[in-house]
Image 1 (cartoon, helix red, strand yellow):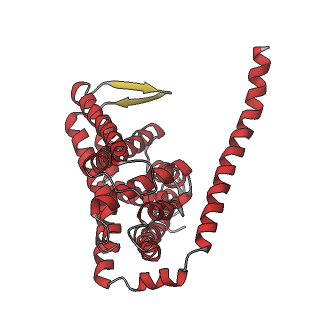
Image 2: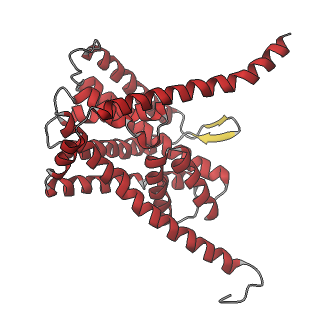
Image 3: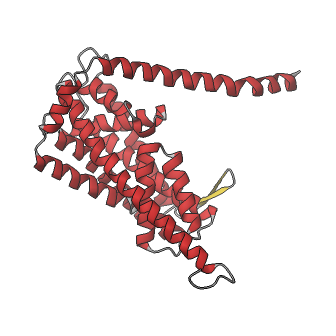
Amino acid sequence: MSTTMALARQSWWPWARRVVVWGFFGLVAWLLVTQARAIDWSEVFQAIRALPATTLLAAGALAASSFVLYSTYDLLGRHLTRHKLGAGTVMGVTFISYAFNLNFGSLVGGVAFRYRLYSRLGLGNATITRVLGFSMLTNWLGYLVVAGAAFFFWPMALPPEWKIGSGGLRVLGAVLLALSVSYLALCAFSAGRVWRVRGHTFKTPGLAMALLQLAMSCLNWSLMGGVIWLLLQGQVGYPHVLAVLLVAAVAGVVTHVPAGLGVLEAVFVALLSYQVAETTLLGALLAYRGLYYLLPLAVALGAYLVTEMRMRRSRRRRLPGRAPGA
């Protein structure tokens, strides 16, 4: 009887889960479309045109610095796994993956592009998995520290009608900081310990590596917040802008919407529209998308095509019995 019930559950549960997920996506889409119809988009585009060139250049410089910094994350995995790919090659793969990850989601960018490019460059799946896992760990460890500090020391001023006060945010910040301290303690006292999870092997890094992970990732999240703060031209305090960005980042991950399209804007509007005009806010966020999402994507697409062509030529040269120039 129990076996029959288990089989029945296995047959209907995947369909039920899909219905719930797509129903949620449909609700989000409906809310976004409804909200978008109420916006005066001519004023939004006017707000974008009103941004000073110096502000755009400074924001672009911070965005470029963030991408360069993130591109070094996989170098930590290179050090950990001792694979032989050059630093420039590794940074190129990370840059391409990150740009596609931001615009098309982690499965396409963060995972699929890394596996495709690294495997074609000669790395095995086990090594790629360790590099990818360590890079993702680095990114979210920094999130814990930055979000924890922002929520605990500078709790954002929420809209007046919200019932959550600064006390709740401080508690959340303390929990996030405690998690990051726990990781540092694990690395300090269990360095070198091997963990096996679902057939994958992970080795605990040392404390020095953990501190380097946190420093790199904290700086990167801070740079991302700085881009939006500059585009808002100081109308909102930097810690507040950074805290809202961190909330939006988690919202984008939870909803699985590619590029967090509409989710980022919805979170900022919900949390900041009582301080900044909605059209000004959306103008700054669209400029942010252009600088941090679309422009790097265009560069990454070109780099990816060039990389693919080079790897195909290299593979053809290695084919046995192929005449030179054929």
